[in-house]
Each structure stands twice: as structure tokens, then as C-alpha cells.
Image 1 (cartoon, rainbow, N blue to C red):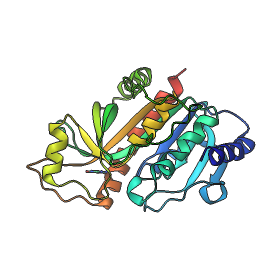
Image 2 (image 1 turned 90 degrees about the vertical axis):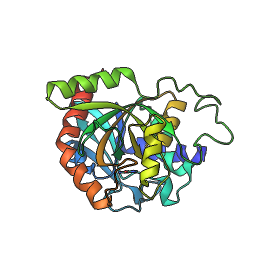
Image 3 (image 1 turned 45 degrees about the vertical axis):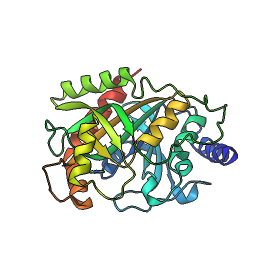
Image 4 (image 1 turned 120 degrees about the vertical axis):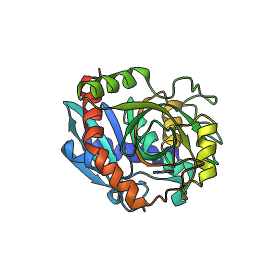
Length: 271
Ligand code: HPA
């Protein structure tokens, strides 16, 4: 696996020839952020050696290298989910590659279900923490010491400075923003009312099917991580609204201008 990661990183390095300041992973329905980048290179996943391929509607499948708010960014449009049948190694493969490219800052985004009663559909939430309830840990197995230690500190999974920079950007743009705890489940079913109740009871504000494996692997390698979520539906023990993928995409679409403003503000101001 290490050889494959190196091979992929070398291929991308030879194309972009620079070290991006940020890697950005676009979540379900959040692909529009890619239109904000002044693209210099676009690499379709099938042309990148060893790169996994996407299977979900609403996910693209390309790496875009370019400039956003004066910073060099490598944007990943189309991520890999555990529920698709990918191994955790595959899900987190791009994050390993980003590290070998020398990227220090990782911005993730996702669509998720809200269980905090203060949240509404299309609200945006910045992750302050998470609870990992995925059935497999991405660091299980032999540790690769060159990436990081066997036992990884997780006291600051989401970088405080990046959270503050994003909140400043939100305030400047009059965007309401929450700080929340994300609970990761494997999916692909949305939660039952009782499961939404459990998420709330254990201290979660929202629930989704991605992000946490990437965060863990990034922290293993000492990358600074930031994540912005869009609440695409609401759930709870006494709420029995039906949720569909289409609804998720619609809500993500509605929140998109706010997501773009916050991410651009964060990137533009961040040193
Ligand atoms: N649960 C899990 N994943 C999700 C949800 C949800 O309610 N909404 C969007 N992704």
C-alpha cells in the first residue's frame, strides 16, 4: 500500500509541481465549490494511478489543482465511502497521498442529518469533535511509523485556529453557524427514529456516513483538519420524516452559497 501511495503522490507531484496549501474534500451535493477555483490542472480519477473510483450519484470524480482566494488548493470532487464497499485503506488513500504531497491543512465537507433541536435544514455546522461509530478503524493493523505513531492523540481532532477563522468569516458574512459533534455511522441506511435518538443521547449533534476515517488518518500524520457540514435533514426519536438522497442534495444546494463564503473566508485569512 505504501508503494502505491508513493506512486500516486509522485504522479500528482509531477503534474502540479507545487505544494498546495490546502486539500479540500467535497461532500455530497457540495461539488459547486469547485467552480470557485481557478483551475490549473484537472485530473480525472481514472487517469490517476491507483486512485479509487466513485460510485455515488452526486459525486464527481476528479482532483482539481488551482487557486482559491490566492491560496494553492487541491480539491477532491468525489470521495470514497465505506458503505460503497471500499476498505478503510481505500477510503483514506487520498488523505495519505495529500500528506506525501506535503499538504499540511485538510478541509473536509459533508452532508449530514441533524439531531440537535437548534438546527434547521440547510444550516451549516463546523465540527468541534466527533464520535466514531464506524465498524472498522482506519488505523487497525500494522502501523506505518513514517506516517505517524501507533497510538494517536485525538485531543484536538479539528483545529481550533481553523474553526476560529471560519467563524470569523461566517460573522463577516452574516451567516449563522453552529459548532457541533458529528457521529459517524457506516450507512447506507439513514437512521431509524430510535437511532437518531441514540445519536442525541450519546452527545451527537448530527450524524453522517463519511469524514471520520479521513480525519483520523489525517491526524495520524499530523495534518490540521477542519470540517464543515450541511444539515440536510432532521431526525429524532419523535420525528419520523422520510429522508431521501434527493432531499439531501437539495438542502446541500441551498446551503452552498454559505458554505462557499465560509470556506473562502477561512482559506483567504488563514496563514
Ligand atoms: N444520516 C446519515 N447520513 C446522512 C444523513 C442522515 O440523516 N443526511 C445526510 N447524510
